[in-house]
Amino acid sequence: MRNLTKYTVRFIGVALFISLTFGFASPTLINAQSQLGSSVDNGIRLTINDYSIINHGQNIVLHYTIRSNSNIQIKPGTTSLVENPHIWIGHTLVREEKETFKRVSNNEYKGTIIAQLQHYRPDNSTMSIHTHGLLNQKGQWTVKFTLRTSQY
Figure (tube, rainbow, N blue to C red):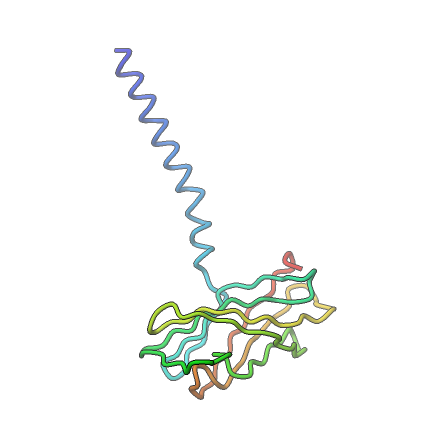
C-alpha cells in the first residue's frame, strides 16, 4: 500500500508540474509568434512582427517578415528590401536610419528597420509603415498598429 501511495504522489506531482509548465508557457509562446499587422500585394506579404524601443527612447526597431508566393530573387549587394519606407507615428513622419535582413528560405526574409522616434509621443500612438516597393516589386503595402505606452 505504501508503494502505491508513493507512485500516486509522484504521478500527481509530475502531472501538476506538466500542467503548470504548459499552462504558463502557452501564452508566452503565442505572444512570441504574434504579429502587429500585415499587408499583401502582388503575392508578397509584409508583416510587422514586433518592435522594440532602444537608445533611451530615441529609436524604434521594427522587426518584419516578407513572404512571397514564389522564389524571392535578391541581387547580391542589395541593402534594402523595403523600398523607401514611410514610417508615421500619428501624423508625424519619422526617418529610417538603417535596415538589415537575412534570408530564411526561398520564399521568406526576416529583417529589422531602425527609425528615429519623435520626442513627443501621445499615449497609445498609432504607427504605420507604408511602401511602394518590396523585393524590387512595385505595389502598395501599409501596416498600422498601436505603440504600447508601457514601451516608452
